[in-house]
Length: 535
Ligand code: FAD
Ligand code: SIN
Image (tube, rainbow, N blue to C red; front, side, top):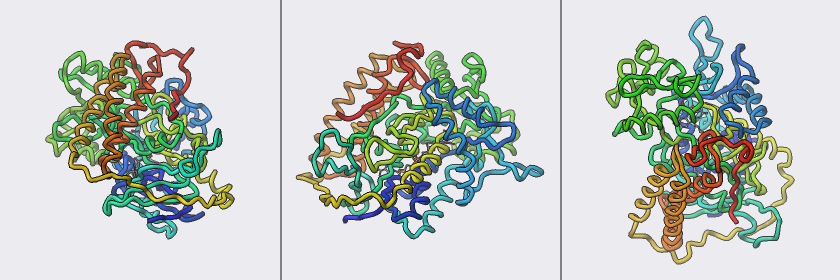
């Protein structure tokens, strides 16, 4: 099938849906998403969206907190732009049907504001502890009401299509993205999507690590595709580990929101001793990099596998009302958070780097935009401030739309005939063990060597292992017909390589990148992004 559309949006999380809702008023939109439409990191967001709404708060406080968390690498104008747009973007969400939790009477007209690590004020708007689910509900409903949007579920974007692949490289000329090859998982076919504008909104890559808060979709497909197409990739070494993922043998990827610490929970060792005061004046509400590194240090020291999050001093009724989802999930594992401290450990959570974009969401490839977690805008620097990512996605989805709407219709269709996908001589594989083995090996290697604490030796080991795995995957990729497992494997290998390469480049410790061979921050030489682009 060959599908022509004005806008091709890859991904149906907050970034993709918000862009699509706006673009639908300009032209035709195809949203391609690899599972069911709500399945995304967005759908699992708990804490909420950081935005200045309270009288006691100010844009300057939110900017300062973001810059401090970012450990010197945030782009200040970007931070200012995002923070000051916040209230208007929240208003858009409310207009599109999102319900945020309000305070009790007599303050029913005010938002109930949560607090999280690194924030000097309460400013996190939330829908109980199911903020992401509420956002996906409202946005997918809004999308359904737009006649110009067609949504393709169970469709996996394989590769971006750029002019240079069809017309050959023209020395020095900026390339232009004109679509993508998309694998229709149910029908086992690859379709060609041709578009004037392609928006990458494919989210992050938590699955590159063994233990992650992310759902299975988070395999870094967009970053890998953009890299293969020649996009600039920045700051991939800054992988954020969330300090408090539920530690239980039967629990898969269950986050205990930082908002629980915002309501007074305290991190404790097995023997009941609180430890965060040793590490930061903000104690349990220090920025996330500090808390995750502190837990890692305490675990290594004690030989234990988890620490405990204690909020048993709070009233059960309050906990059930404020955190109904977390309360119920913990109960399924025999933990009553009103009576038992919750076992927790850090887990890969968020990718601060990604495809480099400017303030309009433009990449270095014409016609290719990126927004949300796949992108690196300069907002997060070396460590994202909690609950700033949903905000970033909202702002950049709008900025990209605003930019495009100024010139929409002026771009000439170059009349390029895109050839259909060529499967070559690929046959069906009877060795899927290769895929599962390499999948496990990459994730193990990244967790052991490119985790919270790194060293030159560990990074070098990871680099060597990933090179070998990548060449094995490459052979396999061209010999056998594609499956979504194989596509994801190829992508996590690429992203693992990008993270490791960026980590090898940065010869200092800053924010989320801690290397024991360079334990200090080096502002003289390293107040800059790491940049990688395919040769
Ligand atoms: P996503 O929401 O991840 O959406 C990506 C979409 O792309 C999905 O639809 C996916 O299926 C699709 N996709 C991916 N690859 C392909 C492909 N090859 N082809 C087709 N489709 C593809 N941030 C906050 O600000 N506040 C919070 O409270 C918060 N809580 C969080 C809790 C959890 C458990 C997690 C995991 C993250 C949390 N975050 C939070 C981070 C935040 O949720 C994400 O950064 C944000 O939702 C990313 O939005 P996105 O639209 O960029 O990507
Ligand atoms: C959380 O609720 O702890 C997650 C918030 C975030 O990742 O921003």
